[in-house]
Length: 327
Image 1 (cartoon, rainbow, N blue to C red):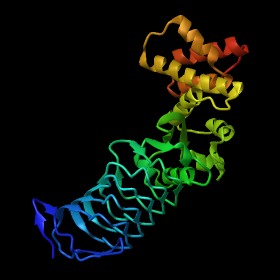
Image 2 (image 1 turned 60 degrees about the vertical axis):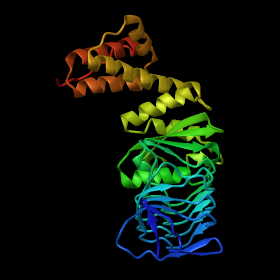
Image 3 (image 1 turned 90 degrees about the vertical axis):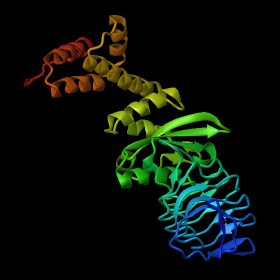
């Protein structure tokens, strides 16, 4: 039926190919093959055409353009190499139950349908690079909460692409990761960074953060104060000041204030020395809401020295206040 040499499949008559479409595979053996190179000329992997196929490494042909629904469902493959194929679309459930590793999804891919590559292990580490040609992402196509950073092309950041919706729902439904950072590129040049938090679903009540082909920073700035996760808020503040698109003076002060509060708390908690001039600079950036947050932090720790510090700072900034403290 097929021949193997040095672990590589060298006789491809096991594949049933009709006019560029891989329709089926006569592989019904319990053994797991080594390296399998799909023959050139294949343009599409048909529906269920490689269901339960088993090999250590699968190399796609350069002619491949489409992977149809359930094409590799439940396939037992260790590694998939897309090589230089010009793959255009990955259809629904194409790799469902296939947990193969792959370095990347080809940059030529424009469409990924529902659950298309959700089970694949893409990349190495916590950064997911999406195809630069990607323009449509359907329901739960990708398991985003496995990553800390998603890198996308500017053309993917549109209201109709589904990017925001799918990231939000992946984070919100799986609960494994509260937020991730999106890095936006234009011809390989970084032009924008922002955060998507699972809390946006609760805060925004289905409002869309991306409208047209732009991030709605008015909503983003409004939601900042309602986010509860501290690390998420810090990253939001840092990136917002780094990329101050449509940033008002009032919001700039709020972001500056939040970062200044965090720095003061870090110095206080770590016992590190801080110059008087630098402390004054941080203190002067604080708004009343963040002064109160600093006081609340000290009260939660029942730290009398820090409580006195924050009360003194509040009094100097806003006049004498009275607090009933239970230490």
